[in-house]
Image (cartoon, rainbow, N blue to C red; front, side, top):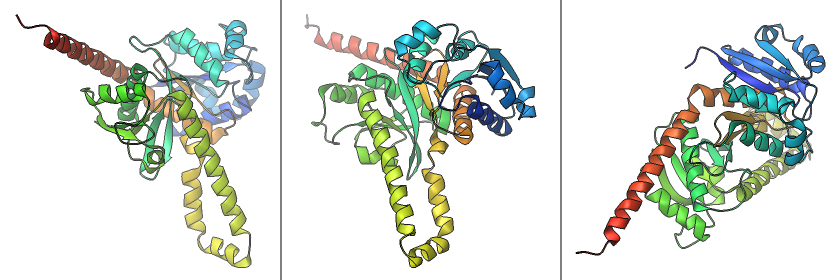
Amino acid sequence: MPDQITISVDAMGGDSGPSVSVAGCALALQRLPDTRFLLVGDQAKIMPELAKFPELQKKSDVIHTDIAVGMDDKPSQALRRGRRVSSMWMALNAVADGRAGFAISAGNTGALMAMARFALKMMPNVSRPAIAGIWPTLRGESIVLDMGATIGVDSRWLVDFAVMGEAMARALFGIERPSVGLLNIGVEEVKGLDEVKAAHQRLRDSNLPMRYVGFVEGDDIGQGTVDVVVTEGFSGNIALKTAEGTAKQFAAYLRSAMNETILSRLGYLLARSAFKSLKEKMDPRRSNGGVFLGLNGIVIKSHGGTDNEGFAAAVALGYEMASNKLLEKISTDLDLHRANEIEMAESSNEEEKPSQ
């Protein structure tokens, strides 16, 4: 593990800008003392926030720019107006030129992905990027990808996502052979789109450091049936938003029920510790942070509306990815997968040759 990891921060991103990002970095520094920060953005807005945290101030450099990508900017607009001069671009560029171990932003997701692809470029043999998120489950935590970066189904993309997801699981959870499932409308092999079934066949025949279990369904995500759930971005994003909405709905029902009668309020008081534990498990800040995979650098997307606790959690996620050599693991496994597919293709061609 490196002695120190430098983190480049788009301090202007998100709904609250420096007031949350700087406070989040200060909280992260308490938990990760072997870090330094490059805070990128409007110095006039960053410095008053930074002055509140003397320890963070000692371990931070501020890179000034008064140009920030808006939360409603289209990716194409952000690239035209903010390339090379915006806080988002400059934070990414610090990773590209080796000054930082990873970049983090709570800004516009589409713009961040577009700029990241332009600044960092795609890894060799990866055709599409993916956003991987941490999903709280009954068993602990799982990784789900893609959650919105790539819309559409292609068997090659899904296999790449599986490779990147299992590498992330090994880096984050320390599992030697993570279990991987392919999200489908049923576990039977005859069900699903042709591209999903083709990806299933390719994963079943691979020799990657994973335990591929086959198809999983939507209810398996929350159950924690596998360590990594693989899907394409359209269904992945819908699953994410559905889960977030359901959690809010359940919390609202619970609050309403606890206030209906005196007995229910008394029951709440008697079970207060259990409800506190439930609230902590359902707290979205604990799993804040999506990892952009498939790039020549680590990029973390924090939720735009999070607070300092959530932003600190996203910083910690990036720290784990950088310190546990995520990119090296992905590169090694992709090379292994490509070599395996070439070997299988050559073997198939040999079998198809007519006998003399």
